[in-house]
View 1: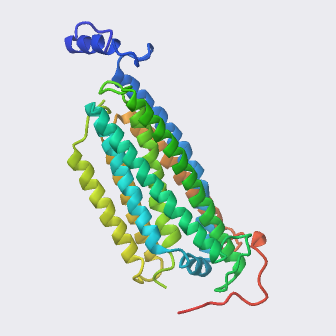
View 2 (view 1 turned 45 degrees about the vertical axis):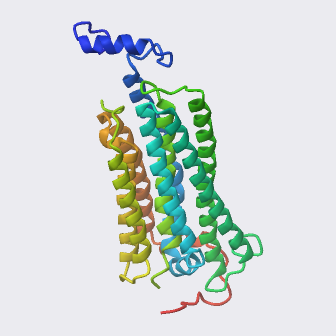
View 3 (view 1 turned 90 degrees about the horizontal axis):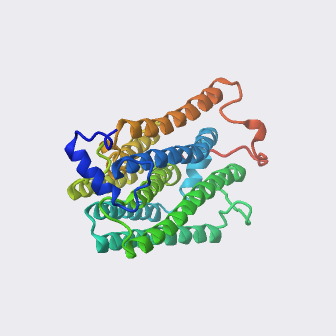
Amino acid sequence: MRAVNPSLNTCRVKWNMSKSHPDLLHHFDDPEQQLDAAQSGMWLFLATEVMFFGGMFIGYTVYRDAYFEVFAHASNHLNVWLGSINTAVLICSSLSMALAVHSAQAGHRKQIIFFLLLTMLLGTVFLGIKFTEYYHKYEERLIPGLAFDFKQGNPGYAAIFFSFYFAMTGLHALHMTIGLGLLAFLVAKAARNRFSPVYYTPVEMIGLYWHFVDIVWIFLFPLLYLVGRHG
Amino acid sequence: MNSGKPVHVRVYVMVFLALLALTATTAAVAFVDLGATWNTTVALAIAIIKALLVILFFMHVLYSRPLTWVFVGAGFFWLSLLFTLTLADYATRNIGSAPQTNAPRQSSEVMPRVSK
């Protein structure tokens, strides 16, 4: 609509400018419409991700309600400091990602690369801390199926808690790992100067993905690490 | 309409500081016994506020077109269906509060009610 109405002078200028951009696909009027379409599609994908993780969250809720006390005791075996630090690390990485998108909108290539690499660094720190925690759980014999040994209450119920812990944080860590790969792809594209203030859709979309993964952790942290602390 | 409009860096930094403060709050409050289910309620309320901050500002939904709001809302609407219908089922069936038939083997002792 916007592009085919020649009476609107500003639209015409925009149209001419945008048509010259090699990354504008022919079925879109202008880069803004293309970005809007990408945004809708990305959120549709994220809706499926919400349901993907949602299944685990509802499962956790039902069993937490059923085995309330054992879940609280089991939760206290997680390291609340490492969990808190990891939450902060992930929030820092989200800020860094937002600033990468901001740099892309402004067209600052070196800044984009800097913030993308910073996001990757923080993501790697998160995974490093996460796997340190996993190793502690291995040493403390708290991995269900691997000589699992839990004495404060029914070990079968505690095993359910730790199964949820490993499944949920594991799926989250898998998403982080995929995110790191996507960020590396963005760095390579940015290094070849493939983004501009007119076209930076991949940065924005992978940014949405990264923030979504952050949100999942925002819920995992209190539900897994904090449920038994007041007891 | 405004999906490409840059947000001021100051906004990002303020949201970032709010997220860190809320993280510290939720971790600290977890060690205080608020009684009944209030610990969980407060923890979830803080998590929802944090998620909203990320969605509205970092993910630019606040500045996005109504269509994007529809997509975002649809995801969380279906999530609410998942929770409402599942919990309605567990809350109203006469099966205790959990699928006892699928429960793992009871240890020989009764589940000890440790502490407090």
